[in-house]
Length: 362
Image 1 (tube, one colour):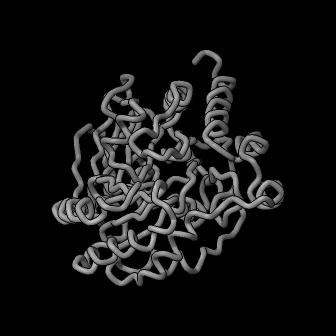
Image 2 (cartoon, one colour):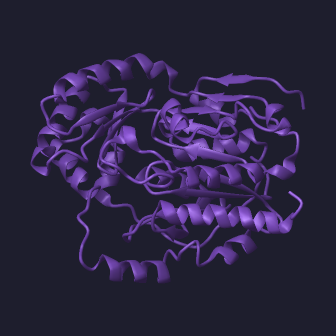
Image 3 (spheres, rainbow, N blue to C red):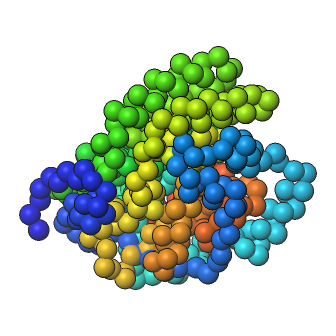
């Protein structure tokens, strides 16, 4: 293949274009699915399918509460039952996972907040540890690795600081391939996918309005993720959640082209285009040349509702598996679980060790 750059700016083109030519296909992975089920919470699904200006404030407030459950005393017992019978630990079942990947090439997809870094009150201080960075760097040495985050691509890449990775920011609406790396990666074509570019001015306009509207609510914070906005209420007293939701709804009435979704103590404002982390996963696999391949094994690790879109894609395709990061039982399309970022780091470290044991010289 001839190496060249490709810039894709619309959703349809992003979904179908192959923008990266890998000079050595043995560097990349394959997949097999696990059995399982998911029934989304009806309330959250109702909000997900509604454009922002159509969400009633009571539904929004209820959804904010549903996305921020209080930990119960029985959670420890529930966790044991959940991991044993439904979503077993990816660490405990590591050998089983590796057996499923035999003869296939592993591709690793990682969420950031709550997966590579702990959830913190100030989103600007969600730093990953140096140990975690080394673990991710080790994985990227052997497998194509992508960070798929709701954060802006620039912000998450500034946190991770590894130029050999693929970064998909704004829930996959801003994708770019590695900028540096070994000789093979330097020869790859650059992949750029921005299917929501036409919404940039609108997003910026809403951002400025939101900043002004909620500045009187203690603890409320708006994060501009370039192609989407995040209204954080982790530091807002619950008695003020209704007012915050009311302000968000009042602004959204004037923007038919935007919609609301929910995350962990965050309200997301996104373009109405059908593009999410699942689409980003499919685009990256296609860009790597694996759209029609049965010999890949994608592993996607994430902790948030938005990661369910990627878990669902893997189940539908019958390839690879999802790993949910959570201490409490949750309905999920993922096949396995890990409790917290420290376990994610352990899993990534074991993955590197497994690869090195197969090829001791590398």
